[in-house]
Length: 357
Image 1 (cartoon, rainbow, N blue to C red):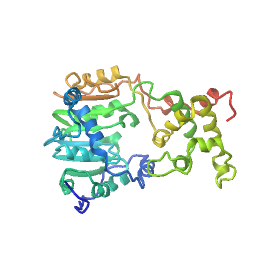
Image 2 (cartoon, rainbow, N blue to C red):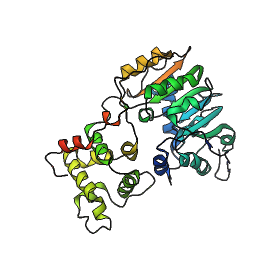
Image 3 (tube, helix red, strand yellow):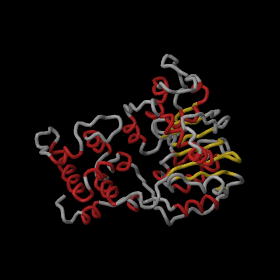
Image 4 (tube, one colour):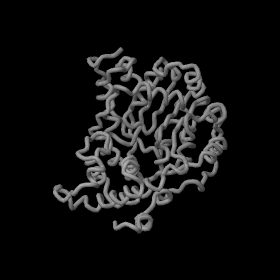
């Protein structure tokens, strides 16, 4: 077991490309202080569920602890795309991976990984393993095929991010080409209906504000993970804010949140306040049947692994058992125009016609 005194010095972050919204994600991950103290079990469960679903079922049916060792990634080269804080990268090393490429659009999240590893208290792998096994790469996930060699990974993992990319189906095709024969592509996605009316309305309203303004208002009510809020949402909308120094600046926002809370309930609105949802260029809702069909058509095996979706229909795991085919990308089911799934202000105004915005 590693101790905090075992300092791991990782190599520098390699910058291959920067997405257009890199500043937004740097802002999100800046001063992010969620440490790797409790990551192991829940991250391990997610890896087993997506990469080796039969083992997940076996552990569930036989009451096998998920805290016990799983070496399902033993000797494998892995890509953790849109890696965020890197907790899944750490879990991959814990699960025996030969190497992990931690790739994200945010330089700050990649740069902060070293600090988190050295503060971690419950890693079973020696921290010095991370020096030899983890490489950190800043990359635009929309052009991932331009930056990595084909057939260079045994496992490609992307958790709840593919729906934020410009074309999810293009990404699936590109990532499949990065897999070696027998490799596994595992990802989570937003299914149809994920962007419910409440989330749509909130995003439609907040899209008129800059990322900095959104960050400030969400920080105020504790909806940024790295920031402890001064108020709860109910305190903000139910009280007179005129005495606040920034009252005039946030008055229209508070008024809007008050009205939306009357429609959907304060708890539902607070749960839907997401910096990423309000600032990301895309939130695609994927049709599961269409996604499965596309994976099969390009040559991925979705029956042995991908047919088992646990515990919801928002995850998919495919095995590359043959060559990958270039086919026409689906158009129906997603739209590169942000307003496809996210409403504009005109929609918001019509939905709230009984309220004064």
